[in-house]
Length: 442
Image (cartoon, rainbow, N blue to C red; front, side, top):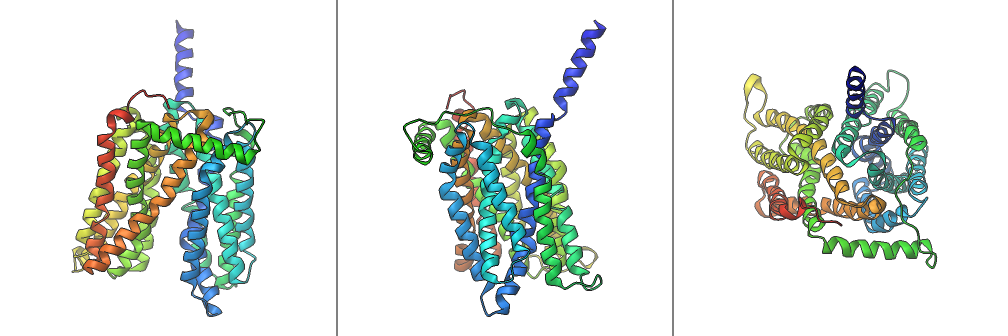
């Protein structure tokens, strides 16, 4: 009996800990998050704008063109890329191609001097980053079991926040702020930061490259070239999605609520700046968001095992509804509050905390819940379409914000309008819940 009890304890211990394979997958979130922070959000865009502006170019215009170009290429090609990755022996090879493109052109951007080359480096590296993330998501079914997907996916987002999104960012900010004290220019400090991002991304991807491999696959029809077969497979997957009420309701709901999430991320600092909030305070508040997101992403995964993934996704959407309402109130609160701090500034910190509690959780559970619904051998194809909805979802929200802002002239009403996206997402989850939670085979 004692030996049996010891064996049971050992099995429970093994189940609660991540396996080496799961950790190898999780570490890619830690590795690639540095790109989103350094190259897409904080450091590189400012550097690009300064280089382009020094030769009379509109940096923000060209940055918008480059970002849109990369997004459209990735979104349109995602189903074909996913379908090709499902063929036997292709998934890891295609991951390697996108990974090399992303890291290689990120590193090259640290040495480019002309603004045209900087823009090219960003576009190609962004395609590499997005393509590798698409295939990385599809590997979730390869590294763990369905009952552990929420836990593993949540850990990926959590370690991504605390690792790539925080540590390299703080180092980069320190390099730029104290560049004169260490005898380098601010431009050189930025280049070092970009090179560091590439090295960080490459170094921490090694466990994934060594340990994660394709186990589920489909055979490519011998009579078709790879690309033709991928087009055919993607077409069939699209038909299956539209025929499956389970997937269709969920993916439409995902489109609306993830659009709201993306809009809050994109518009938060712009909205705060419009209200006249302190820039340093906003940056520190966003860092707080990252730190809070680390434990909360793990916490959300644990709660999902207790209450169900769908229930926790709904809860996260409801919290985002409240975030928009608090943001609306913030638009009317510039008078002095406690300790002389403007009420709007205080509310921005509250919003940062609220976003931190759900931002990682809703993204992680959305990924793992979808992964549990699709056949593992076709996960690349299905995540290709999932990626389309995620990429194009970032278009509707900012457009809605801009439209309401233009009509009303009020940034407060503009941020309140984002509530519509969360209501639509919540409505689709409610209307389609009986299908989404059914045992329907896809």
